[in-house]
Amino acid sequence: SPGMTYYWRVRPRIQGDGTPLNWSPTWVFSVAGGEGAAPSATTVPTATPTPAPPPVAFKAPNDPYYSSQWSLAKMNAQTAWGLGGGSPSMVVAVVDSGVDLGHPDLEGQLVPGFSCVGEGSSPQDDNGHGTHVAGTIAARVNDGIGVVGVAWGVRIMPVKVMDSSGSGAASCIASGIRAAVDGGAKILNLSLG
Image 1: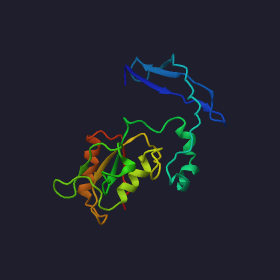
Image 2 (image 1 turned 90 degrees about the vertical axis):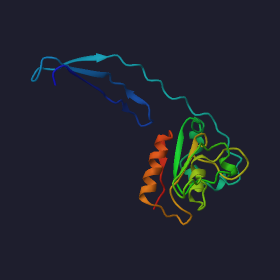
Image 3 (image 1 turned 180 degrees about the vertical axis):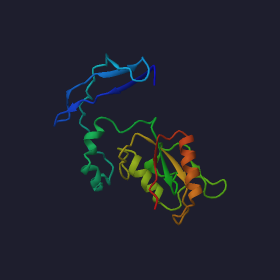
């Protein structure tokens, strides 16, 4: 289209150790002369990338079942936690059977939720699955109880769309997804089926 400007960034080539080999500039192509005109290319200056800080040593958590959480060791979570355990401003909606609102390992981790199971009901879990998922994501670290969540710094929004038997209507699931997004969740977890 005449007068249109197109932007794109050329990604850096990465070496085997994960560091950039070189950074390419962003190119801007502007077509001003109408259809069939030759584009002119100019370089737009870009900021020099700042490498991520190296992870700091993160001592093994004191949660009693941490040593049984083999998947955390497999994904090298302790090294990742040296960079942080997630931000309290990041809300993850667990769209499931609800969450145990009084669970000690989730204390302080929950934001207001939603339920479409039973009129006027709370997102209290009466099945257990949603609580398990919420704990896997955000169980508190170094509280001396239970397990450790992968991203223990985030907050959980309990969204109850499944009943005590683990069944739920598609319309309720859709309502739960909409409520989670409208409620500010940036990540939605649906471990259904």
